[in-house]
Length: 529
Image 1 (cartoon, rainbow, N blue to C red):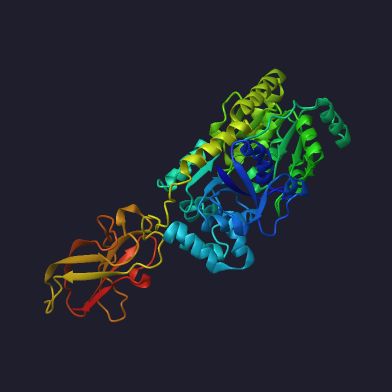
Image 2 (spheres, one colour):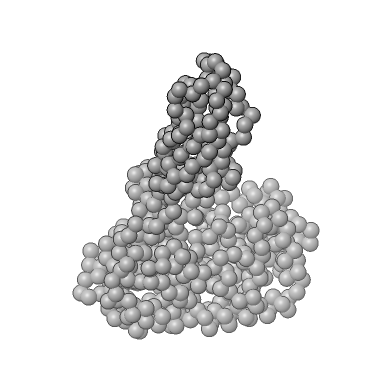
């Protein structure tokens, strides 16, 4: 196997750069590996001296198979650009790549590339989300709901992920993509240096006889570190401290949150630490926290390193954490405002049981030794590359997205015909009208009984030229009997009696809880009788 390894590399501050450094020696025992130097990114001199390197323009040449390492931040823009052009095997470290897309488009003030990419990946849903996101509407929900990876993955010969949950997500999004879950390789470090942990506690002024929790890795709102901070304010944890290790995303004010919770003296925000201090911080804690919601589908390398060091952990009962066995981690349910209390209850029980913490730590270390051996991970990578290297990518294909509904779509084109209202219509005569509705738009019209967004026909009979006296004002609306897909039609019947004198018949479909369809491009029928 001749591989071109495409990834950020140290000194880039990326967990995937560190992962690559751990995996590469084992990969080189099984394949001819060349590293690709991504444009604009530094590479440590010792790496350049130790490995065969080539510029990005050489990727895939000389019968080499590109092996891409794809993450969800700007460091991987060069990886994405190459992978879109040159098919290879792609390791998808984050199932969701929407944050990267936002960063390299809207983050640079470029809206149309964002809309184009999101539409290509998610059809009309992507286009609608892009238009909303342009004005910063609807928060971050679409960012996690729309992974923005479809076009990229369909151009690959195969895709590797690090959890069965992630593999299932990719298959659900697109069954034609070849995807396989392999364990993330994490070297088993020496057992924690307890003396180094004690020295760090003294340096930070932490009491040696009090429990210390740890949260490790890049700190973002989805890491839910704020939940851990608020949990410290609950009874029974008055003497528990929390170490927060890792860079914090912009706008994440953890120290301010600790002050608001009244626990600032027990929350220690250390930021990014060099490797030696990072290891000492792991040794200094009794229990680690790795909460997450929502998720980009990533397997946490920082969590695996903590487990490898023999430290027990609490994780969220959610998504990719399902791959971890119960003897290794404890799961806390997601619960909104109740979550800090649930976490506090678990913490009280675990911190009061040192023997259980010790057993969990031993099980965690053994789990990483067996399941996450980098040599085994390298074997799995090379096996997948051998199997897929000659297979064609699935290729470009329009996403199969069901049409929008009248609840959410802003244009509802259609036709309306009325039979039985022919003139002349004598005064006092009762007639049965047949109203035929035809959906000529893009969205599905929802049946009236579905409530808001459902379609119903409103019949009005005015007896004055000012259209203020409606004889049928108390008559119930006529709900659409079933959903109407684009191109379909339905009939509704009703009886109307022609009053004496002036009469004007007005028939229009309406949305329950909304406007008449004529204001959304839809039909309306009216006639003076």
